[in-house]
Image 1 (cartoon, one colour):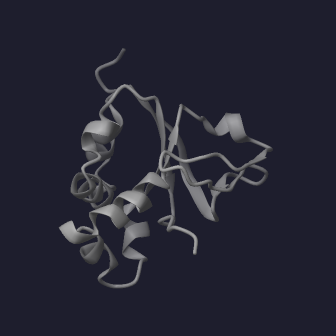
Image 2: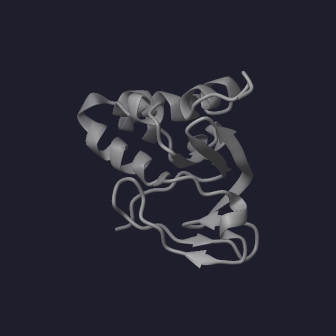
Length: 141
């Protein structure tokens, strides 16, 4: 395997456009999980996606007392298994996330997950794949 392929966390760190996501994963205590064997599919909101949330949202979520809520939000972005863009092309699915909730994936016109658009797909990692999305997924209800 080439040296340029890393686990999901190291790949996100190296990309440089996921510093908010990496900080959130760290605050939620999910680093070891996402460095684990997997495989995982991570829908990774870019820093721009986090910046689009209402002011103060991220700062509030990374506080220790909000760890459970932050973890629930992050788990919405993780699917067990490795799902490549070609696996959902032309399909509409409602897979179960790592947190046990379902998300709506629509692969009929590009790929969206709960309305967030996949802007970069299929970033290979040693323990799964990252798809960059333009919106942070939030729990329904």
